[in-house]
Image (cartoon, rainbow, N blue to C red; front, side, top):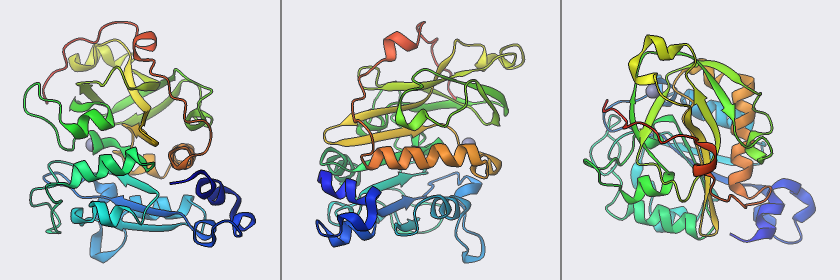
Length: 286
Ligand SMILES: [Zn+2]
């Protein structure tokens, strides 16, 4: 992806002379495939679009072309060439049969996805995107290395506090200071500490007294990284439907999509060691 294409996406018709196709539209692919547990925002009932698809279509410019699918075979080198932005709200091993009975991802799917990002693609993952292509034991899969961590577990939902560690980053400009919201909060393991720019931590607050798994120091909950010429964003939020319906969350999603497409500086110097003050305790299995 070249710079003028990204500029075209944000300044619309003005860039038509440079590249008519790019000026008209950004091509977005949403993958919402689940191997064993499908989150309700990704479920399409009676053939209707999922809440995820409806929300993304509602918050992006009308000119953008958003394709949502549960067909994991669409993640392949040839097809990815059509897209500037790929959104994953996925779960499990997508090369295996899935909940929707749609085609499986080919064996080269993850490698093709990573190569596409390295060449300038924008990747945005939500919630169970880290519960996707997990590795056995201590194995870190290429997908986990790419997205930055692996889902370890979650307890009962509670009101957690999102503590912003980089308020100047473009994707954090609409995240309130000490944002409190009711969510299913993931814990993580296998952080790619050398690559991540951590933008927010979860403060479990009083819940530390109620659920032992959350009796831990603040830990990363939203992060970004550079990967070659591409950009990767991950937010653990998005389990609950009312989170997707929350205008503040929607604004943060809009900011994330724009950044992943190339808005603002790509400089995402890793900061894990400086913003995660204490070594995280050994994460517990689900
Ligand atoms: Zn969940």
